[in-house]
Image 1 (cartoon, rainbow, N blue to C red):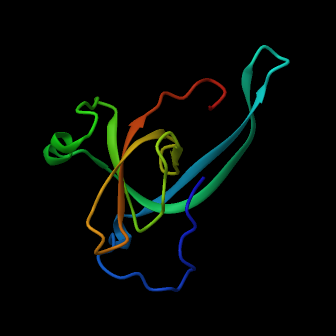
Image 2 (cartoon, one colour):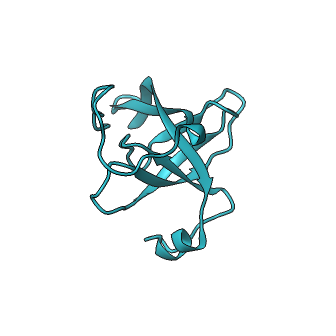
Amino acid sequence: MRTPRPPKGQMRKGAQIPKHLLRCLYGIDIAKTFLQMEGGISVETERIMFAFDGAVLPLSNEDLQRLPEGTSTINSQKIYTNGEALTPGQLVKDSLDGQIYTVTTELTHNTIHGMKRYVVTRRSVSANGR
């Protein structure tokens, strides 16, 4: 699932995202169970949300050139965190506007600091909020 982050109060070395750019984001881990007797379908059994601070920003031209997939859409953004580990396919909810994003890939930095950045794609929210 996700990598545990260092305890609060423990100093991280290197660059940090300024606090005035950060806002509360929620990572969503979804546990599923495969039901063979029901026709071989996967059913969501548990949805776990965890809060972390991050910044949602547009993709730059440099980001677009370096994407491994080579493509992006009008719904592509990037999320910066101060070390929170996300995985491709994971959902992230923005507390500011309720928008939900799907993590598509991690953009790498050198190992000089703990800051992480991810390319995400905005999802359309259905009537039931999922």
